[in-house]
Image (cartoon, rainbow, N blue to C red; front, side, top):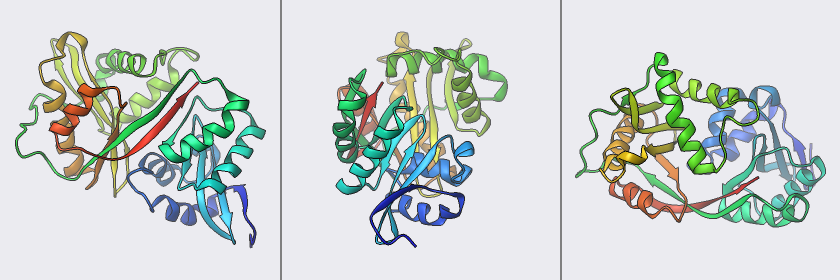
Length: 281
């Protein structure tokens, strides 16, 4: 029994306690919760370690340490413990992302050792909805992408990622990991697009999904089709699928400077309920 404040790498037998922590905020924690529910806590299957912070023998906070470093339900003391472990391990992640307060505190402790970052997005509104908009007609041409349409959807996914993150997902391993992730979303029926003349003009994915909440990601409109309102009607179509078939709560987070996207999401009924922060390396 752990009786003092401490951290450790969680093991498969700790999964129930970890899920209890994740369930405290099913919307903010949807990304990590979805991975844990599918892969458990084995680092090889999970794609990284799950660190646990204990107080008085009880698991209180988590930190996912994989391609992303993600603090979960982490107060100041847990953040300090996770920062110390991360500093000693060395940077292995391509980003730190999570609820803004904990992520900001974590980065302030790691920046002297890991900095400078390529970019810091300090305030990314977390937006949530539980219902379809009454006054927006969903785009009837937005549909699920089929497995035989990978060559159609991939250029749009690469364009979206490069525009959003600032680097191409094809760098490094030639895009093998990114293509596998896109294929996973297509194969699970969570990739959606409107296709005109063989080209994607709107796309989005339900990137993380649990029975309690899911998260839309990768929203993109081809540059030559922007200004047609496709993001509003397209999002309404994806939202319809998400609410009917995935989860009762749908969320997303968006860069605060992307005023057009924020306005489009509000038109579809999303409301800002909190904020995320991302540190990109």
